[in-house]
Amino acid sequence: MTTKLAFLVKHSTAMGARTGFLTVNGHQVATPAIVQTGSVIGTLTPGELAECQTQLIKVNVIDYWRHFGARLPQLGDLHRLIGWDGVILTDPGAEQAYRWAKPRGRKPSGVHFHDPQTSEMKLYTPLAALRGQAVLGADIMQSFARMADYYAPVDDLKAAVTRTTNWLQEFSLPANCLATIVGGGLKRARQANIAALPASVAGYCIAGVASMVPIEEQQRLVEEVITMLPSGGLRYLPTSGTLHQLFTMLASGVDLIDSDLAGREANMGNALVGGGHRLHLDRGHFAVDQRPIVPGCACPVCQNDISRAEIHQLLIHHQPLGERYLLLHNLFTINQMVSAFRTAIMANHQTEYLAKLGWNPGQQ
Ligand SMILES: [Zn+2]
Image (cartoon, rainbow, N blue to C red):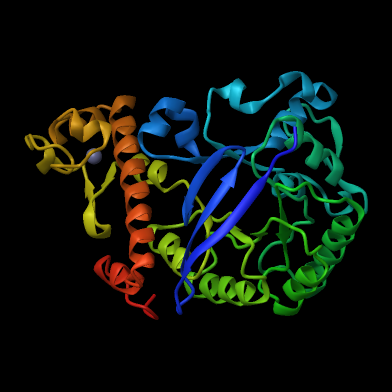
């Protein structure tokens, strides 16, 4: 099956934020949008994800490749396999492969590593990564890249770029494949990577910006990389950070961004509420609070009038349903916030939107 990916920028602001329209395999997604990652996908059903307005999920292909190897095509299409009819963005899992590999496992042909479960030695190649994503029916794929830590020595970052660009020239990327850009915080390394990209790529994955990189540095780097990219390409940042990081990156002109925030906040007993605030529902004063998490919220939990008191009880007695309730509410809330941010960008009010959340431009 040939996958078609089309991306159209609808409105760009002088500050960099923009809205757009992504069409892939019959799915239509308004951007900026979140790519859902993390515990949410293993906890909520596909129906619940959709009910909370999730449109894109990320699936890491390396685990399927490790378990099934040459039998991977027998698995068939992931949408059918997991029951998800939204967009699937796949991650080839290069970062894991490089984390598992010893320094001498970084080969010109790919990466050699001992499988963490079976100890079997495996060679994961750029071609295996591309084929794996294709046979699993990915809507949006990413090219394989030689990963290096954000703060890696300059030589290591340069080596990562050289190998990544060699592979980009060796294997032509399918029409729905984003080109992965590496190079840590080194401007000339990122420039060299971008200069080597074929003109026909559908979009760009700005890799290697770990969530622990300070937000000012993330913003500086992402904005610097964006100025080097053709404006029509889709920009994807596979970094999952705080709510502040998420909106700062979207305000900088990122179209798609990872988020596992709903799950992380739920795991801490937190419910996200308006204005970027949160309720710590495991605290004692919620024990007799009969209100829903947010009165008027249209999420499945608040719509069913589940009380803060009930969620508090479930949380303090470690009942999994308590965290699930928070997950559903948080996921819906974040998706609603991103939707409102799209509207704000269209009206050139993105700065006012961020200020309402307590984040002024330039203030970190
Ligand atoms: Zn709610």
